[in-house]
Amino acid sequence: MGLHLIEGVNDNGEKYYYYNNPEAEDFEALPFYNTYAELMPVVEKIESLGAEHKVVISQNVVRIKTHVDDVCLVGDNKLDALYQSIKIFVDNYCEV
Image (cartoon, rainbow, N blue to C red; front, side):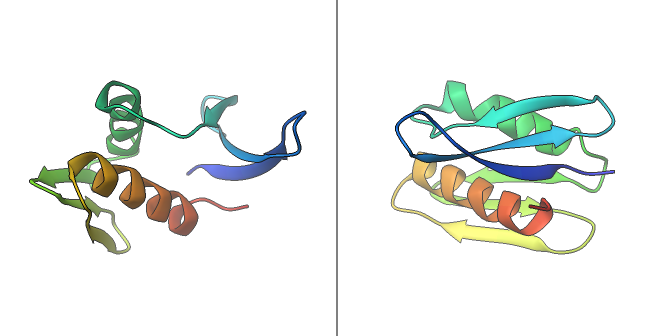
C-alpha cells in the first residue's frame, strides 16, 4: 500500500513529479499549486490512505498525521504551510 513517487522531466527540461497508486493502478501529476481549490484534492487523497492519515489546518500551521510520524509546519500563510507540508509528506511517505 502507498504511493510511489516518480520523477519526470518535461519538454522544457524542468523536473516534475507524479505518483502511482498501486491500488488504483493509475498515475497522477504533482504540479505546483497556487490555490486551495487545487490543493484540497491532494489533502483528500492523503486522508483517503487510511484512518491514521489526517490533515489538520489551523491558521498558518498544518499538521499531517500518519501511522508512522507527523509532519507539522508553520508557514508564512495558510496556503504556503499547506503546500510545504504536502511536499514534505510526499518526500517522506512516497518511494522514488
